[in-house]
Image (tube, rainbow, N blue to C red):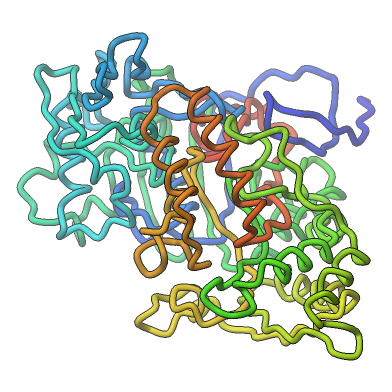
Length: 531
């Protein structure tokens, strides 16, 4: 019998494992079937009509992008592209306005038709087609023209240099669309309500053979996959609306991987024999936003006092079961643009009380402030109570204002709390892709409802550095610009990130080569195997 013990490990540079580890080597099981559980069922299997992150992960089983990322989240790798465009290899022009993708030869769609540049051009036009309900065109709208001089070359012309473009165009940044088969979809005015949405044809390692809505999706290995025949023969994806149901299925060994769970699942998963808890970092933050268009939010002393009065380390540890990391500012520490010299204010309640006292707020005359939040999350419901207690200790009385997630995150014209600016202070989370680009959150032009700048924060200095960060393809130049951006955020405090979340996955210990990158866990599913 092999003895196993609980260990802590790191996959590549970014993925933390807290798992039982066994030292005995066991051969892969031939013709193995992987069982996967998700809490959200897709709206569509068309890879340009996805609406949420779980759809993106599912799509990657059967659909491919041009580029992806390795598990560190710091290196771009080619998938359908033969190489990653750079200045050095000449695929990014000297003026930064012509991006050339060279495509792999010999790739075929799952129906046997050849994949070529016409598919990429077709898919781009479908993303930009106003008749298609795509979730975002950010980055794609920088392209003024696209052409294919031959079957294996695609050229994108930009209005101006745009640094994230290589990983935005059918990569993992922003909205990671997969490529569509032009020979099957050409001629339709829009992509909505086509049989393809239910039974797609891709270039990916697995092909969809059945979608039983409300229950499961079944896939089989694509034996002609261009990166190599998948080691798994079948993948079955089942859906359960409640995360606790997925945890129960793990306990019963009914699924091999429960994907993208919340922090409470980590506490349960650590005690389940034969499974490990995999924590995958994400480019997102969870914390407080100030409405700087209101008197309380516009007071710099109040914003600083609130930061001093919050114990980020304790909140991250107790409320997320140790799955999250205490944050400095918005860019998480695993990203290449994270400024390692940045430090947020320490937890110092005495300094917070003194700062507020100079403005007239004392124990006898506390500051009153409303805190808006979504009631849909158990973590958030517990977090607002903890924040209310911490801030009471620095003479701030917090009135909690809970809303359904639909109202909290809804559009301004429908009364949305964040978009409409109907808050003094809000507890929320912001999710980004692999790019450090945060201009849609902090630029003056992005003030909601024109972007995601819910804080109504506007700084000419911030805008200058955002322009500099997006105009250069040189990573050191961009990293320096983001160092300034993060320092400005810490100085001005339009927000207080409390922690950087990590996605929780419960994974069977006999699933081999499960090395998710921080953006798409299924980026290399063709390499997975079961012992």
